[in-house]
Every structure is written in structure tokens, then in C-alpha cells.
Image (cartoon, rainbow, N blue to C red):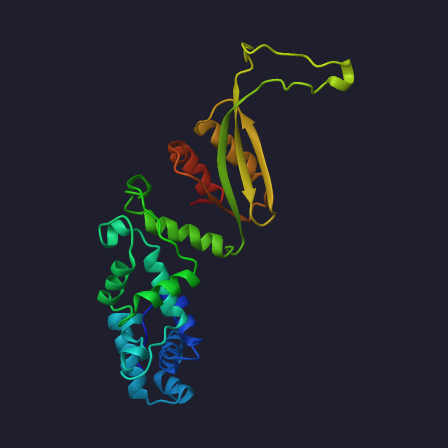
Length: 291
């Protein structure tokens, strides 16, 4: 009886179950989430049944459902059982509705822009909601400040790992990792080194003029900048070239500004020299993680 236990939880499943546990308007989802979380906490089925006010057989049944089908198998939507009363859309349903409205359409329906009719048909087909009027759907989207956007083909990433990378960055931005620093890194340039008019007026009493054909013999420079989200500071250095050698020197300079025990979680773009073997080797040896 007590050998049935919930499987290992994924991070997003654990977060979803904690949200379901706090659903005061849906006591069924709250009970099911408590059962799964208590099972992962090490309690046996008899203890869970005693604490949740149900039978051990029902606890086993909920655990079996979760192990087979995940969270969807233990979620109960009250509006599917309602026939003669108005439908209520709770906060989690509205959040899921807005998430669908903001999703890229190429992967969902193969088109470039939503309409209210298309969105309603998709939500009903995916069993997110049983039914909804166009006017009520429009009001919900307006309350959540969701506006239609025509998506361009060049804006859609063809990287198969785009969404895992996106979610990984969102998790870093949402919560600071334990014992780490969140740093945003980018490069700026090329910058022209040229004199500015009127800077030494107080010293010599007049303004030097430069012809329109002034030759900039000083060359150009590139700035490597880093924004620390914890300190709320922006620092950087200048380099004559933008390549992996300059970027590696910038990483070494940045690493010296923090304690050796801290892990640097660096968010950067997809420039090719960021993935150079020498750069990745240095990052692995000096507690630097790239996002």
C-alpha cells in the first residue's frame, strides 16, 4: 500500500503543483497537488491520507494518475461540469489563454496573425476552454494588455533549441542562482576616435574647426561591456579588435572583479567567437556559465 510513490518532479512541474496547492477556489486541484508534494516529501500513503482527509486508496489512485499522465491527469476543471450556470475563467485559465495568444503562429496554425475567431477555435480544439464568446474573449485580452502583432518570417528562429534556451534565460532573469552573479555582456562598436569641437574653449579662448574631409587616423575601438544585475553597475573595457582573443581577455578581466567562489552566470548573444574552444575551456575552469 505504501510502496506507491510519485515520480521525480521536473522544475516546472514542482512550480505548477505549488501554484495548484494555493488554489482556494478549486479545492480538488489543491488536494491533488498536496498529495503529490507530500509523496515527494517522503511521507507514506497512510500519513498523506490522514493529513489530507481522504483514504489511502484514493491517494494511490492520484499518484498512479500523475505517474502516467503528469499534471494534466490530476487537474480538474470545474467549468466542464457546469451546464446551467455561467462559465468562470480563473486566473490560471486566463494566463494560459494569453500565453497562446502571444505564441508564434507559424508552429501553431501556420499563419502570421491571430484573429478572434481563429483564437477561439484553437482554444476550444485544444480543450483549454469549453466555449467563449468573441466579445468576452476580446475583453479578457484587453484586460491583460494583449495586442495583435503581425509576425515576420525573419523574426522566427530556426534554432531547434530556441525555446529551451529562452526558458533557461527566463529562469536566470527571474531568480538569482544561489552563490552566483547574473551578468549581461555585449559588445559595442566600432567607435570612431575623433576630437569634439569646443572642448578646449576655456583654455585657448576660441574653437578649433575641422574640415568635413578630416581624416580619422586614430582608427576605431570596440567596447566590451558587462551589466551586473545584483550591483546595478555597468563596467567595460576597450579593445582594438573584436574577436575571441579580445573577448577572452575581457572575461579574465571580469573574472578578477569577483570572488573565486562565486559563479558568474553570463547572458550574451550568439556571436561565433563566444563559442571558441579556448573561451569555453576558460569558462569551464573558472566557474563561468554562458546563457
